[in-house]
Length: 348
Image (cartoon, rainbow, N blue to C red; front, side):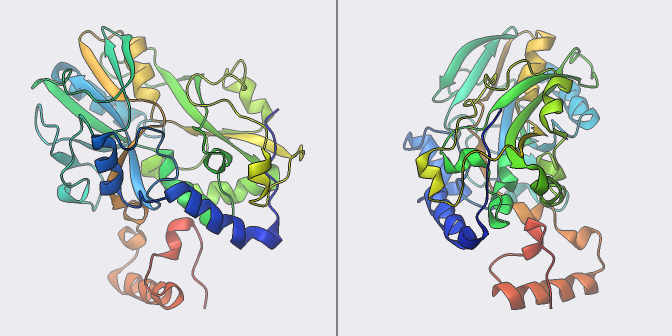
């Protein structure tokens, strides 16, 4: 059983402040993380970096599979939410936005898909060839098309701000990820694929809040797909202590206790989300010919657009209602960021 997260309400403010400081460091924007990754100054997982900036999984395919992959994303939006793709065949420095209301030039200015992720994976004929390499400069060709898939790291700031920080972020570990038995809807050459999920433990009493906070983030997997110890068996996960990617769940350490957590609460259960490693598992299942590239699990492309860009409620509200809501939020926050992005309703 995974160890518990027990939140001490009296120290909520202290541990959230400490967590933000620990996680973000100097990498406080998407551009900063990309530059650090390109230069080799940053080479570890990106969870917790650049709070409020969207993070994206990467899959790069030969052009013959591009249309089938778009259909795979459309048919499987929970594990494969498509954020952007190469603006043209072979383009690694210009992206076409697939996010409603976000322009192409808002995705990632000055990006180089080949270098701006801390670590990459390279597959050849459906078999892993290179593991956690620094770049894909030599593998990229004019026939490749890049796709960016939403990442659940994008809602971790909202969870932390709500007093529900994911345990792996505080321990500076990679989130555990697992293969499952949930079938993907097939699309063209992509057949026999299954969901990959990420896992974050929470107390049973916290799950409804966790669901509410992450629900608006449908572009980055949204709310969890399953939770509880019975879900482990339902998903076909054989051993939760041995994830297929990422770091194994570990006991709460003494370092974590300083953030207000205690060990031993058996009310804590695993909570599972759709995961953007799913496309890499799909290309293995499909046995695609040629060279395919992706991010190393946990090592994301950090974008310029923000988490509130994907859940902005103006798409549902009239302009007048949206202005009134924005005015109310600015009065509370000083205009720093919308409260609604974390699932917290503004109050009078």
